[in-house]
Image (spheres, rainbow, N blue to C red):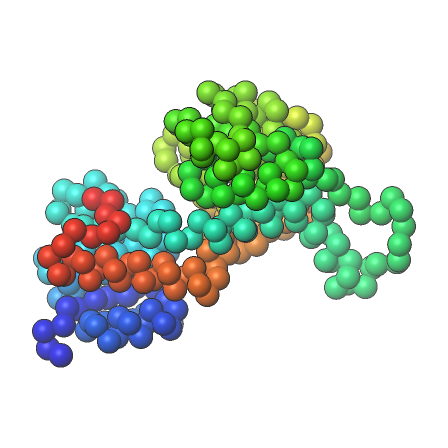
Length: 324
């Protein structure tokens, strides 16, 4: 249909989402997932009505300024939108949307997986099996630590932090948290009767496990640095499923090498996929390639949320999850 709106999809997306966009829009897809630089994004966007992007597409002020006047909305295929210059988008009158809510449970599952993987030394155990190094049952071999009766600090108690706390409480963990605002009593109860800390230092001081769920902002960039790691109990375990740059890699690597920290579970990294090589040889790090929302159901839901925003906007209605 010639009156269909033109949508440029800059990233590879699930086939079910492709099918819906292909049905309802004049859509151009990048299913080869070849990264576009600024000039390529600007050129490809010529004459388009909307863009679908994700974190691998850097929508800088330069890119936004160079976009065709026809582009009116950027539907972001993720919750985080730090890769988009929001001020530049707002100044240009561009609508930007994201995909909150739909990935809460999947990402909380992944955080729980990292807590368990780091606590039970899963990286070392899996390597022994695959490399033929397992010599049988030895009672003091490859010992991990229990989650039960340990203090879990949750940094950032949004939807995902609460969902992780709810899971961790079922494993017998004592939940503590720091957030910009205290939760109401019902949400604290859901999150394992979580104990509120008014400042992050007091949370770090008691966190035998620390799970990071903060957004990346100028204030949280390299939040977990050497000074803050020093405040944590010896032998603590750190889990990060938020954004890689919330953690100072060099400080975390040094603490893992020295034994200050027992282990870490990392799903996100600075400069993904080019992670700090210091992690490669550390046996006490359980790492996964940013799979927090990577289930069929969740990625489809994220894509459908992005398309729902396009549908609403082009129908003359407010987008469902606008960030500008």
